[in-house]
Image (cartoon, rainbow, N blue to C red; front, side, top):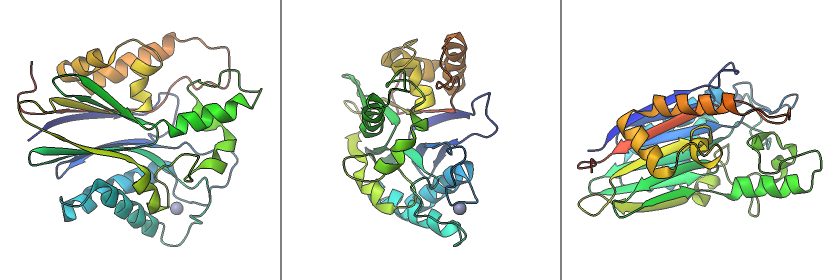
Length: 274
Ligand SMILES: [Zn+2]
């Protein structure tokens, strides 16, 4: 069975952690909740931190009901169950209803299933090479919107979540898909299955964008170095290195959030040590 280590830390300048990491019943996941837009009524009295924890709990439960069902069905069932937890007190058809990016990995005997939805990254060490799997539809949508908005000085900058026009493109074709209140989003995720064993998967890292930024924004590590750091020193050390890189980055723009919630999980399969 795989060995799993997870860490999740809120941004030091924020009140609650809207990321969530979990492992249970052979399922590992990281979720990154979308920060609520200031001054915008999202129709929900519960909030993003509540949403990611409910969704995580329902993912473990839905997977535990039958490890044979596809991860897309597990996610769809968890989204539906989380809808029920609002107990009819919230308007769930608001585009800005609580939402989260999702990265899941599940060992099932000699096979490993994965699912990636929206802005999370899965890094797989296949022994013969490293593969990164990320759903680029969110960042492509935001970059497209920002190119048409002169107030955005850097269309590729970190703080992609604050682009208000994104709400017109959520959970629809031509835009991007994310776990929110519509279970159909699960069937737009990137999914796959790889094998364990001699020539199969050796390690995998599940990262919210607050952790993958060590490679894809700050460039303080490459993907093999990130896997080695997670394997040898653990996810807390990775997040500490991200915090140091964030502090060292001076930006003149008020658009840029300095810190982000960060979650990383490392899964080691038998014989993972080189
Ligand atoms: Zn609610």
